[in-house]
Image 1 (tube, helix red, strand yellow):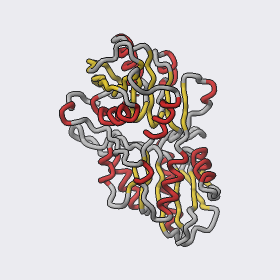
Image 2 (cartoon, helix red, strand yellow):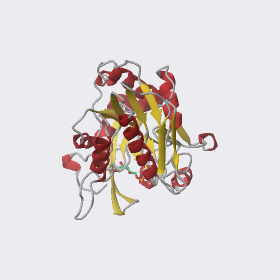
Image 3 (cartoon, rainbow, N blue to C red):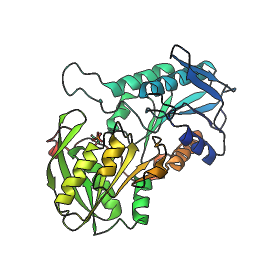
Image 4 (tube, rainbow, N blue to C red):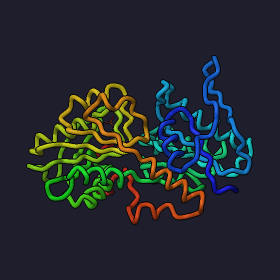
Length: 337
Ligand code: R5P
């Protein structure tokens, strides 16, 4: 098998695929990923992949061309199927944002485990491994019997915070819910800051309410750390509560900026100084939104792909950084997130 990776992309995050390919000094492979008039996804791979090491970069999110989350998933599956039938030697699904991850277990009767369904589909179509970033719950890796590399955005996010002077004693890192305490602890350690925890409840899906804050935020600059921003409600409400407790400023960081519905507006009107996210999901015209900062994680993916292709360690990239999970610490499992 050739040591030169072939990169292909669907429509959900072509800019990131281009950037990863550029850093690997290869081009994005030719392919047609569109729709038939009847709305069914149409895929055609435009170059020879026989015997090649192939990576398909596709976040499971809305596409800049207006296609929905389900289209992104279908594009990914059909591309993998086409590549397998075209005799690619090994196909890796590179899913910077792994959608359908929130339903990773049954919380009540008659619910699906959507994250497992995605894993089943990828296996059946022929993906031999998964490369992703900050899975909502690290144990989703267990839905696969093939290798999963769950990369971390934390080094990129922390480097930015440090460059902005957001480190040390004047900072308090805040988890916006019990599920994110472990992640916040790792950020606090890296930024040499203290830790606080917001407790939230969800009276209904996509609605959040702050119930309490544990830890001292008085007179400090708070950095709230989350894995994803969907409606923006969790961060906007957490920031309000943290400021009401005496924090001077509130910044937020998250790996995945989904920004569903009115989220950008909600966050723009919030008390948050800056919303820092990565480009696992495309943002659109960020220049028109001065409160938002988008950091590129292309190098992390390029490094991981390069290491996979040459059978070198991927975990070495993170120098002992622990896996980040959104699962509640057992002692804190008091709220539904
Ligand atoms: C919850 O478990 C997640 O870590 C996020 O806090 C949540 O998904 C954010 O959702 P929203 O922006 O809709 O409040």
